Amino acid sequence: MPADARPAPIKLGTWPTPVEPAPRLAAAIGLAADALWIKRDDLTGLGGGGNKLRKLRYTGAQALAAGATALITTGAPQSNHARLTAAVAARLGLGCVLVLEGEQPGVLQGNLALDRLAGAELAWAAGPAPDRVRHEVERQARRVRDGGGVPYVIPFGGSSSFAALGYVDCGTELLAQVPGLDHVVVAFGSGGTMAGLVACLGADRVVGVDTGAVPDPRATLDELLDGMPGRHTPQDRLQIDGGQVGAGYATLARVPPRRCGWPPAPRASSSTPPTRRGRWPGWALSSPTGGSSRGTAPFSCTPAGCLGCSVIPGSRT
Ligand SMILES: Cc1ncc(COP(=O)(O)O)c(C=O)c1O
Image (cartoon, rainbow, N blue to C red; front, side, top):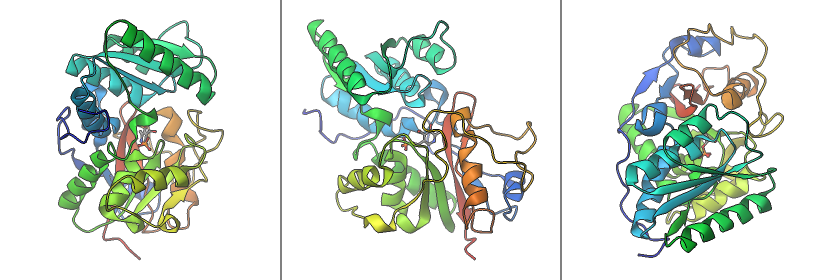
């Protein structure tokens, strides 16, 4: 089967993931206590969980259909997508090479330790320059082939139009769980998460908060949606907020000052990974809709850094 075949997705995780109310967080950003819900996509199961697993159900199926013996992908050193690719490769009995930006650190911490525990090989492409990463991916793919294997390269962040179908599935789950949902707000990295949600729920109900991972998020999203048959959405209707990029992707974002009681007490039931932590409350507090009864925030949970997205049911003002 060709590498771009469209096989049925594999199961990989535990579905559907729960939605939970977040009353204290809602109050902290100025919403009614029952107006903010968190889609717990950190509880997807495999490899510590996280949003990338929904996309890997599709790309993993493509890799198997292509006869792959090893998955190769790229990311920042603490990439959640890289961690889950390593876990998926282990689950499927495939090899895994992660091409990571930068220099190998002296001690492998966080996701890097989990990558190694899952058996992935780490290859380092010094500097974030896309060319260096691409050359290293090509070199690693050659190495796998020279060893008699079949490499399968998964794009940055696991996002392709086919993989985004994983977030069409998520949108379908959400509609069953919160039938009157008003808006879904989600972090925008490589774009597949938002693309799938837009394809399922429509552009008017989905807000992406850019994290600075791609140079032109609107064009990236447009291209992903274009590759989803029958899913065309006019570019000017896509809602992407660029006000929270700060110093750029994979950098620590500043949590906004203590307005509306934010940040909440440390015992709050969920935590965001540090590189996302300041961005969604920043959006919620600064956007004209955030902090009102329509505002909401994307959400992430677990120290390993995984995704949830938040939902406002029927709270349109
Ligand atoms: C916790 C979390 N939420 C959301 C996203 C966005 O996902 P995508 O790369 O599909 O835009 C990411 C990845 O950047 C993430 O790690």
